[in-house]
Amino acid sequence: MAHNWISDTAPSSLRHGGAPAVRQVIADSHRCSFMALNQTDITQLLALFQQGKFSLVIKAVMPLIKKHRKVPGLHDLAGAAFAATGDFALAERHLSEAIRLDPRLNSARHNLANLYFQAGDFDKAATQFRAILKRRPDDLPTLQKLGESCLKTGMAEQAASCFRNLVKRDETNVTAIFYLGTANRALKKHNAARECFERVLELDADHFDAIFNLGNICRDNARPEEALAYYERAHRLRPDHISTMCNIGLCHVHSHALDRGMTWFDRAIAKAPVNPEPQYLKSLPHFLAGDVKAGLEAAEWRLRLPGQIRVMYNGPEPAWDGVASLAGKRLIIHAEQGLGDSIMMLRFISLLDPAATRITVLVQRGLKGLFAASFPDIEFIEFTNNQTGRLATRVRGEYQCSLMSLAHLTASRWTELPVSRTYLTAPSEAAAKWADQCVPGGARPIGLVWRGSPTHVNDHNRSIGLQRLLHHLPQGPNYVALQKDVTDEERALIDAAPALKVETPELEDFADTAGLCSTLNAILTVDTSVAHLAGALGLRSFVLLPYIPDWRWGLAGHTTGWYPNMTLCRQPAPGAWESVLEATVMKL
Image (cartoon, helix red, strand yellow):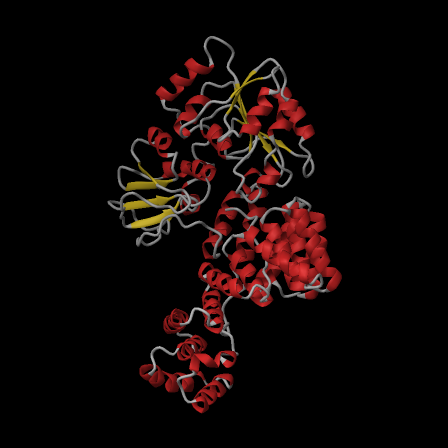
């Protein structure tokens, strides 16, 4: 249910669909590819093509191909015509054949590259654009297309290289500067991205996409007031742009003005009632205001938002609606989002009857051992890959649902959050192992987590960095790092603070981590999966929250209904960790 992705925009040339992207000028500079043919016939064919009479071109060129199969220009022309009529398969076939017959035929490579680009196959498009540039390095339009393709395939560094080259050749190339800003933003080079977008506005003061993306940068870096100014400017340019309205609403929510945010989401819904984006975003103020059930209901709109959820299971079972009887049936419940989300939402399984229903839960790697020990009547199967959701064996049932949707589907069965105090138990063997290692007769240590996954969209706001944490830790207690994948740089920081006793054990999975956690005096963590683990285990824990917290934590207060033994430690302003840390370590 992450909300941070919402309402980014891309320039129109990065979107695909609509009119054919295939080059309209074809073969005029490659008449050698038609040398075996009557040039009058070829001139007429090219004229038909330029007039947009693609069906007539196909009708005329296909008999010629039967007679002259090895003439690359004919395949090039046929492929371009098929592409223009929307026949991707035949277009690809003929353009590929033209290139096979004459690898130097750049018009065919351009057409094939644009065909792939139009179809959204940006990897293949990039391959063809690179081949063209190898022969014609000064082909600037192709260099731009290569950069766009790299952006779409996540190769932001390569994209940035392309656009830097374009800007070097023309410092007033607005499109290239904008794309360079987009690539820098993807690389999390926020200052460099901002400089690019500001340069675009120097050249074109009403460049909507640059204004919008400046808003995105401020929003992503917890500066909602600055973001709001940019979004309002964008709104004046395009008052019917739904994503701009949604982002204005988000800025108000991020400034803790929930009612104003809800008003903007409702305005967006009034303009576009079937658009799922504002409907889904209404879940955020509901959650932050403490109305969990209304938030869960609105959050179901995420299922209609492309790219909002990571589909880890694609089974054929119909979706369970929360009403259909499960008696004698098998329900497959599958993880959808992060590890912490799976831990938090697992509690709602207690509302199902495993004696009447066969329940199979598909979870991320590392969770099965812990979950199975705590819910012995439930079948748990791990995905072999947490990104793709692959399974080692096929499972089939009568119904399926997302673990993130289970709370909403069972909403009629609960008033208070179920089994909130403790619903996971550390395996006894894991707890015994760590008790022997970490508490050999001494005081129980304090567990530490200072950062989350670097790939998380909001990690730069929620993580605090080890050096800052070490600076505030008092001497005396022993500490244990519960951090996954402690880096060499972080180990060096720990070694450089000899007055602090910080162990960095190797942890196998969440069952192992739960065993270690159960031996600790307390846990101090940023908002990541260990926070949910500590909460579900019912352990004494302190969670450091950014000023703009995740949806589940509300806006105020130091307690949470999700985990009664947890203390929430909130930033008083964006980025203000010092006062939070000073107050929290006193409680340890």
